[in-house]
Image (cartoon, rainbow, N blue to C red; front, side):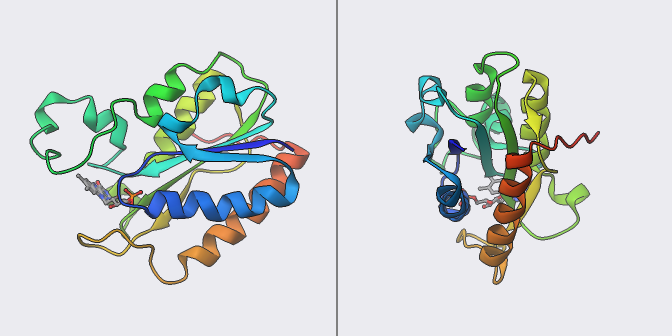
Length: 177
Ligand SMILES: Cc1cc2nc3c(=O)[nH]c(=O)nc-3n(C[C@H](O)[C@H](O)[C@H](O)COP(=O)(O)O)c2cc1C
C-alpha cells in the first residue's frame, strides 16, 4: 500500500509523530513523508493511504489561525508557513480514491478546552470525499515553551499506526460528527 504522510508544525513534535507513523507505513509499502510544502499534490499519484497531521494552535489548528489577521501579533515569534495543511487540503481533487487518517499534537487536558486540529483535518478530508479509516488522534506534548512529546506518547503513536494501517488495508471507513 502506497502511503503519503503530510504534516505541518514548527517545533518538531508533529514531525516526530509523522516519522513514527512512517516507520509503520514502510512495513506496508512505499511511503513518502514530509512537511506540507515538501509534498506537492502531484506526489499523491498512486497513493492509497494519506495521513495528515499538525499541531493544535489557538484551540483548533494552525492554518485557520494564520488566516486570521488579528492573531498575527500573537504568532509573530513563530515561523509561519505561507501554505498550511488546511490550504493544501483545499486543493485536493474531490473524491480522491485514497483513504485517510488524521492526527494532531496538542497539550494535555480535556479536548473541549484544548481544541484539536485532527478533528478539523478529519472534517476537511471527509468534505473532499476521503474515506477516513479511524477517529482523529491526538498525541500530547509537554506543556510549556519546548515542544516535546510526553512520556509514553511515542509508544501510543506506534500502537495507533499499527491499528490504522490494519484498517486502511481492509478499508473500514469511520464516520463521526
Ligand atoms: C501560538 C500557539 C497556540 C497554541 N494553542 C494551543 C491550543 O489551543 N491547544 C493546545 O492543546 N495546544 C496549543 N498549543 C501547543 C501546541 O499544540 C504544541 O506546541 C504543538 O503540538 C507543537 O507541535 P509542533 O512541534 O509540531 O509545532 C499552542 C502553541 C502555540 C505556539
